[in-house]
Amino acid sequence: MVVAITKSSLLLLGALWLAMPVQAVQAQESAPAQKIVLPRSRTNALLEVGIKCLKESKYEKALECFQASLKHDPGNAYAYYFTAICYRELGDKERALSYLRLTASRFPSEEVGKLARTTLSEVSRLTAANQAAIVWPGTGSLPRETWVPFRRQGSGMYVEGSVDGHACSLLVDTGAELCFLPLKILKRLGLSAPTGKPNSLLYGVGGADALPAWVFKGRLKVGSIEKSNFPIMVADVGVNTAILGQQFFEGYVYRIDTAGNAIVLARKEQPAISAASKAPVTAASMVVDKSGRYVYQVPFKRSGRSFIVNVQVNGRTLDFVFDTGAEVSLINATMAKQLGLPVQQLSGAMMSGVVGSTPVGVSKVDLKLGPIERTAMPVAVTDAVQSGTCLLGRDFLGDWHFEIDESLGLIKFTRY
Image (cartoon, rainbow, N blue to C red; front, side, top):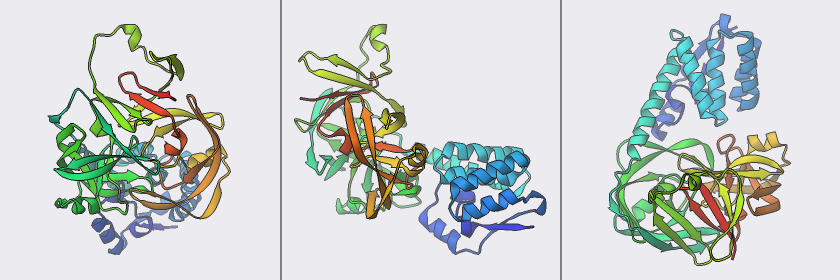
């Protein structure tokens, strides 16, 4: 039997692997379908079922079929390639790229081997272009110590800043790596829209896929901190919020004073400290500061510029992004299923993010991070984020004050 797979049905072959400009995607969809034809010798029942599931967006079931096919026929290039596609759709890009590399290296002369090689080349080009776009040369006005007032809007923290001299409010977001402006805000500020092809990709809640974006170098000022030639991401999205991401705080240790509504910043120094004081804190602990207050220390690790903390969910420890930009806490639907969480689907329940809006379910769970415990707390459950992604939002933090100490890798919680 000959099975034909078309680019128009999967929308995920070749250069569509990570992302393409919207115009290019539309061109692919409107063009005549280009077929990948499985030779009779490479077709088996497991592959056929897997391909059917892939077309129906049943990615976990499709992955099971392709992996079973690999055990039955380890020399089948198509099983490798479609396994890569499944991992990509499930948000596991590392495994996806790993299977792409296997396809390209083991089957260099086969059609999908050549396609995998082309795709890897495009991924490498996009990654290099993105990295070049977000480098900051370190110039500007960087005071030794400063503070920035913020105002509450809902449960969000907003600061007043400026972009190239134009006043702009920004949401402080510990879950965002870069600073971001929706295209509509850029135009409202009177700044020129980016031209040429997008040079970056935008990921976020609201869609599993990336959106094309531009990174331009501007002058960003918040309080007395001013960074020149600083990378700011721009994309044409539905949200109307400018975001102050972690790259702006690079080089500073900062404390969020939720009682005084201020962000207190001190430039990182390299003092001579003892080896004992350098010892990392590997578990949540409690100390007493000079004022006699209890300070709870929670270690974090870095993933890019995001802070990753260990949170207990119904007694099981999971990695969460510590995300002050997220109004509610969130668990990926695949992970919720693995945890056996009951999910209630509410009619009309939606969650909005930078890349769009998506329907969500709700599950009530017990959450614990250091001293903060929430019982039967509602969390959003959606498949419109990468597999394994969990966000610890502002609804969890409540009225706790916290300080992020990057030099020690700690988030310090206090209550007044």
